[in-house]
Image (cartoon, rainbow, N blue to C red; front, side, top):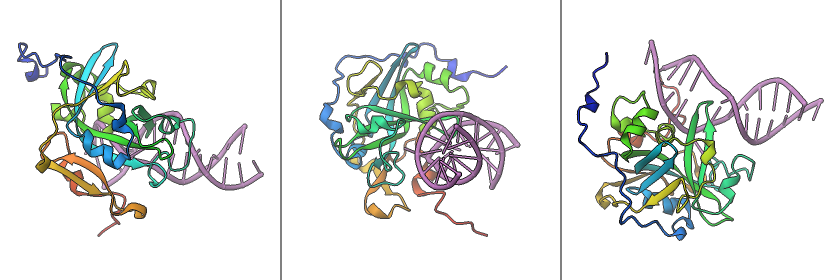
Length: 229
DNA sequence: AGGGTGATCTGCT
DNA sequence: GCAGATCACCCTC
């Protein structure tokens, strides 16, 4: 007999996803290096439409991957069956499966000969909250719904079936302009362990957002920390 | 702090 | 064709 406090406000119409006045982004938005696209994605809203409904997600944390330059990028070692979408036109979703149980959602960007992508790491569910809660029953608070890349994909209902879907004007995804965050709240940080572009900031987030883990924002890499004590 | 999970890639034969 | 290493994480303890 759990106490469902979150169901105590039935009159709140927060699950509506009004379509009026929401222009799509120009396709050229993604025809830039991922390090330029990534910060511009913060604060924008990604709508995901699947048979069981819509979920709107306001992006709060993203990470750029530069294909040829970044050893951590799936595109680093060339085209394979799994990462083929990264070598296609920008503005499409690249979804991969990892750790035997998690999906992660990336947006392909960059010129075709310089494939890159932006990993969507966290966001705030601004529409379709009930559906997102149902998909992520283990979330105890709403800011947990899309806190972390695999949770984000789960909240949106994304798996490999959405790999390659158009993000600009496709039937599944739609990237809406949203409200850009105040410049004073924008943060970025370099990733350690990537020597080829040490000056390039890879991770971007909005300071103070509950869906962004503040601990992770200040800790570059777990792997890079040696065993102490 | 550690366990779990399965697709993918690499290197070898 | 196959074995072993890898993996950008979530969850439970």
